[in-house]
Length: 257
Image (cartoon, rainbow, N blue to C red):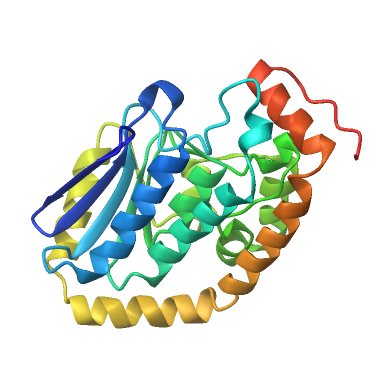
């Protein structure tokens, strides 16, 4: 078990909890690799009927860990490859994956949540594609999953302007499957997990495969475009400035360089 990922399994549910609450569960490279490994390994486990991904404390995941003054020197395309690996593991797994979201789900955290099959959002949830704020573009398949759920116009607002959606807004827009109050969130999630764990695994696997084929058939193309675009952007002065500004808690000065 890595320091920032708690893994547990009970009653058919594999529970993967991002556990760095002091950073709003910002995802480190080590935790991203372990998360992908657990998701990929779930397919071979007889004791897993459903996977639950959540965050400890007051957030789901605030995105990639950009802490430190020199984060721009270490943040490269390998971070994108990790995000894509996680989303592939979620969508290709033949078991339902449930995201339990309270608080912020930003950047790759948003991509992870929206790649899941069922997304239970508390009213406190906030979904943000914040990549443009640091001079980058969405990755982790978000250019496909968000547009498939809410359409091009709303996806552009989220991706270009960094406009967030509350849990209620996300539910009304069709971005998430369930909405709960914060007080009832855990109870609703657990009821859903029990229901899925007791359901027909073969039928669920076939259904997930068919729905994903119908709605996310272009996911691999999207991941390839994201990787190509992000690789170029990561070499720009704007991306370096965006990450420095993020670490220094100031507004970035983008110059198109």
